[in-house]
Image: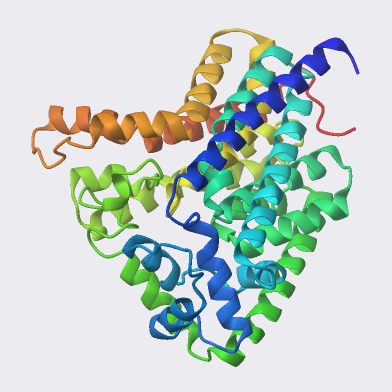
Length: 440
């Protein structure tokens, strides 16, 4: 290994250590343990004991009986656990961990998240450093140093996003393909709204990529079938209850509500979809959902049409970069889901190596995406904007409030449009990029 690669590896390990240290501090500073993983843990344990986790009353009774005596409960933690909104496939993955004591299961889950996310970041850096070593390591370190809640919270997004990125590397490098398809299949099964657009891009690609996508879909379908059969035995009405729980947690002012009154918009782990922008203009689901679907639908349609028409492997990273940002905008997501922006590092490195105005545009937008979705920057943002009144009717005031209080979806939209523009332009001109190998 060369000296520069050793240096890059050191800084990435150091950046990861920063997130791990803060994650440990976050967990030790709470009364009990992180709110993310226990919800899946107790829900899966409930299911394994033939209890219905999607029934709030049944899960609440099970949780009360199973809760560790040393765990100081809170209304927020209880709601996050007893309103079960995870897909059955998630319980299938978590089942082995639910056989263990809670703290041990938490530790192993966190360790798996750290390993997979670090591996995903390293693989992306390994591709990008062929074009621009300095840019690649800086961006990789920013992502690794801002993953505290990914490691501490225990949300499945840390696993899902990592698996999706690893799968993209396997497909584009044509290495460890079966492992990659297993990763993509599990990612797709657990959170289709995270990895679905990446999977769709491969499905629309050439014959080889289409076969890979179908293999991943078969794995996801197998997991879905087994999980639904398992859940249906204990909870025959789970689908109706699941929808009711989603509606309850997304009510006006609720933690998943994208509107200005939402308590979920005044915490670092805020909702980041495009609905949060349009809701400031008009806090009406009929308006902000429709507006979001029109914008994201138009961008997604362009991505699909260009992919179907050209099917070129040379510009895959630009398509995936746009897809990673667009995915966050179309439906409910939080900053930990936005770690999928790791896929923007290789195309940024390609453009930087080529130089010109687009190089600076790529660097500024990719850097903004990496920083603004980080835990510390979002905590600072919330601290300075939590008292902003978003109900002002003046156009100028609304625009200013949007920029100050909703920068994440605006940056994501800019990234999606920018890399889509590059993808369209290069696909039409068949311009070859600077070397950043797609295939080994």
